[in-house]
Length: 387
Ligand code: GLY
Image 1 (tube, rainbow, N blue to C red):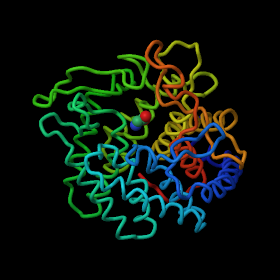
Image 2: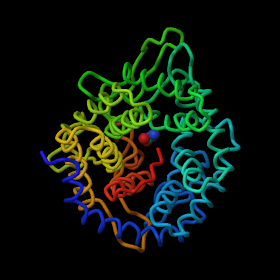
Image 3: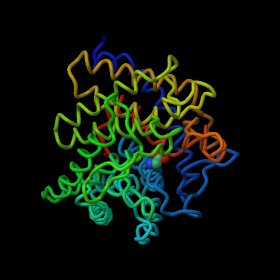
Image 4: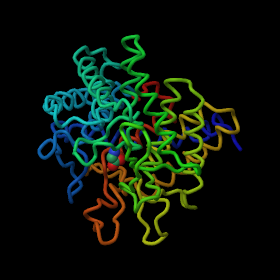
């Protein structure tokens, strides 16, 4: 197996060329969508403004975050202007306390956390601290988990996605030199190893806990095909999420959990390296989820960097196979529309429950573009790390 470094060198020209295309497309998109908070595109391929329908939607930090990430690498002020505008628009959502849930990391850490890291903006630091305190307050003490959503029936739910919100807590502890936020993040990550991670390396999307005894009462299929299934974006959240907890804590148990999920993810990618929505769904019809591939590629690259040569090479090789295959099949470079990485899917279209349209199958979703860009920037050695 070639090492991480050899593979990085071999793919350098590809990454440079791909990033040029991303930058070209994004430098037009950033002007067109400056006053929007996009999470998807309309039938003509233009960004839809989520601010008009749901300012608190969990995806609303990715556009600002993507622009900060691009500004950090290119120093193109137009990206900074759009990112600042996005953050300003999102203050309306931040003021709506009852609508805030565990997705505060996705929403503000990628945006305000990024702004503070890049420019030192004090207002963004305050926004991020408010979010960290609110996220920490969702920790259910005896149950040992961070509550995911606000509706009553989800009172005792934790979801695997929450691993990606924990960086907000790691940041807050580092920033004030007090480990109380970090301890909550680690308690939640430990619960995820115990309750979400299965022996074969797959993960459960939703766990329902007994909040007094911390026992698992039930598991739910969530956005996958059924109970006991393996929703690929959930696997990607776990792969990258455990890796990030390892980066912030140095605890081997998170590295081992990340490797277990990564091994499972790689084993379940088909010959074409294009992740399906659920690894346990029937082979036909073929439903892809490119967002799972993009997020997993980020996790695989970070994992590869931190492992001995040969072992790291295996993960890097998988990341490159996924990125190259998705670029070939799913990316639209036409500068006249706002859609870059296509073939994302919100959830599995369970027959009799959701049509393909209701499930949001094979669409362009903003976090697909976010993770795809992040992965390509990693290949170029970008220093900025949002998580
Ligand atoms: N965090 C929700 C999703 O991945 O769709």
